Length: 329
Image 1: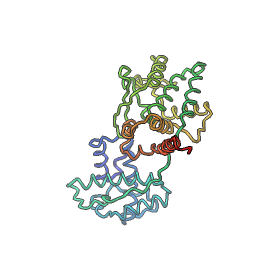
Image 2 (image 1 turned 60 degrees about the vertical axis):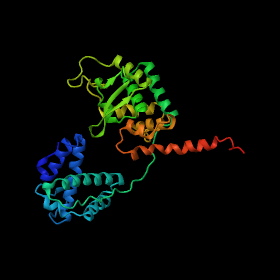
Image 3 (image 1 turned 135 degrees about the vertical axis):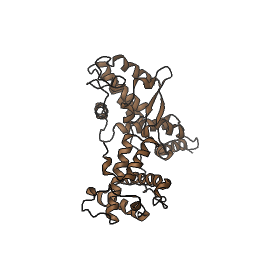
């Protein structure tokens, strides 16, 4: 819960704008509040409006627009350097902080009542990110994981096996996020149209089309899904826990880790999020999926985020050269 009393008026105004006009999720609002309150605490000390030894203890609730007018692009750079120097913040973290600062100053400068003539973040660039290749299961490893889970199903030792198999199937076939999976409701699934609706980042709704494997796994699970004594406000949740309430993120992470171990796969290398990477990579590598279609499926705001999966193109190009009939000449 955000304590608005600790914030300057202009920050609370921005948070309200983000929630109502930009339709940002509660998690995004909390991140905005955390990032910007720390930014203003640093700036208060950096510009001489405060002098706390521990910057986190700086009182910023009386800061006003005149204070914002003092901030320059160089000051913002000083803040990002402070994060890197003091906390060893990674480029991805610094890029997120920079993005938040840009969005805030764009809002403030576009509001004529604030009389902020110069936007100090207008030319703020993102730190250069390391283009790391995503870790993912190969096709053979993915099949091994599903086979291990399915073999357990036939033994019938665990009453949640069909639920857990359905979870793995959705991850590996649809590439959905963990937060999206646990939020699925029964009403979100349209079996007659073979599709379901998920709520992604920023409360954005998108459609996921279900293939035969997903349809079969979901139907099998729904046959054994508890129907009675479900906790209030959890009746519509697709995946239920032992306590008959919506399954938690931690429970799903435990399920994935357990099934990876069962399949003999490295749990230090693979995780729940790596199953999302796996789905995207396999679709691109074997399904000849257009990068724009993959972007829509994964719910990426920027095509550059989706392009990390094109690393498999190098493999395909090499294969094409090797298959040239002249390759043996």
